[in-house]
Image (cartoon, rainbow, N blue to C red; front, side, top):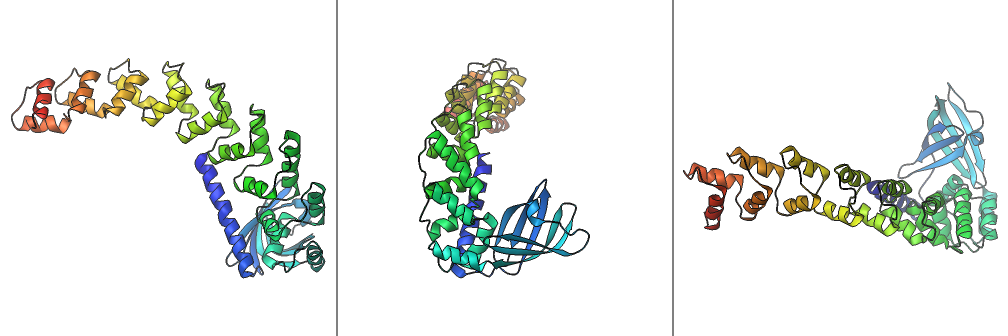
Length: 367
């Protein structure tokens, strides 16, 4: 989940960089290509030009009657402009080319709001996000006046439409966060922290989680499902900080359950993290159990790991004719550098039928 979270952040930043580069170069947006798929009453359309791509969602009703079985045109009009789609639709999907024409009246409105010389690349993203006059009215009603051109770009390129903004604003009011800056909301959006994610943390029992802590949790892949599973596994009072630390150290619910299934029901989160850090897994212990070492505790398993004693090491020693090798002896052999290769080399030199203690002494003597 952490990897999934990091990749989404990187993609968002990459798209944002491309979009801003478009503004700087006043990149041509027409003509372009599109591909779409319909999901119930929503349509996702992916747009692309020579050096850019972006996606947007539309209500199916906005597209009107779709031409099927033959090439046709569909027109969508929003305050920022008009998009004409030409292409084919069938089986809930479509593809073709588009032309976007910015609305001069909306450009004039933007100028009256202080935004001058809006490039076409920004206008089409205002269209995608459906930033319209009602949007600006909503922002003003909630104290967000004097939006700068930089903030407008961020709102458009991060697809922070009125639904997204109202979810944030209502949550911040309800939970007492106060007036959160646009920059902070954009940052939360870039990191995938939506209002629903923050709400889910509250529902999981973290009533006073800060926005920074919610963002940190998302960045580290700590989801409400992860927390819920940890609580089911016995960590009923787990804090967000503990959950983040466990996630960072690769401690999963399956990891903890595995040890509980082995009979270690009182394993603490700290101890689970320590075992993971030392590379002690359930599979590691079970390998020793299969070899006849039935009472390998997590403490003993950690000692074996720390001393480099693997099941394969003991199997190799036994394969040389030493059927009865205790775990203590295996640790001693490893500590003194008595490997399977060393014993085999000594035997090839004629030093056969020696005890393991004698091989230790040979190794200590510099052989």
